[in-house]
Length: 205
Image (cartoon, rainbow, N blue to C red; front, side):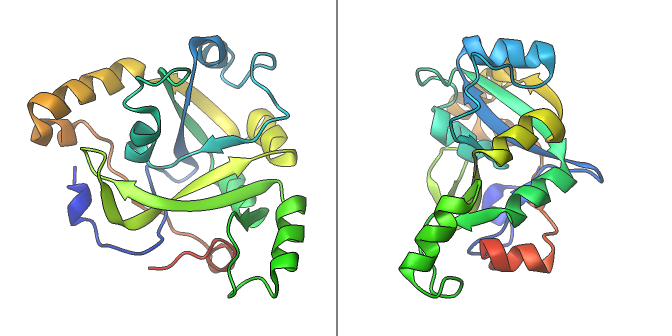
């Protein structure tokens, strides 16, 4: 496993664990949502709320930052979710940045209109190291709503694994032997984003 600090830095680059057909994203939930999802291999509504925006994260360590190593309330179950690369890229093509960008949007009103119509929202946040400290490049967060959630739940998900126990093992090593903890992480590499999507989500290498 490469040290996250040694990966070539880019201001906004998608890094993920992926293969020819799928990409892994992470989400954190309570047992009430997570356990039925693992059993059904997709999200079950209810208790999962299809009408709410749900955020998926390709970065494992950013998920750990968001959930506090699975210690935060209602985020104590960590799910590793494989979705189709075709679905992942479809989501990005339907997306709008969560903040105004002069390079894309002619006016703020134009951006607000697009934000209202788009079922997918993109946010870039500082990536985190093994200690959850911010690094000098940003990782993508993807918010799904409306058609985005429907397609995610019904078409894009390939498999769901509960990795909460693995997360606990890694966190124990972070406290005792950080170098060993790094060896337990899945390697995340640059995701080959098509040029049209690079322009939409503002990837910057």
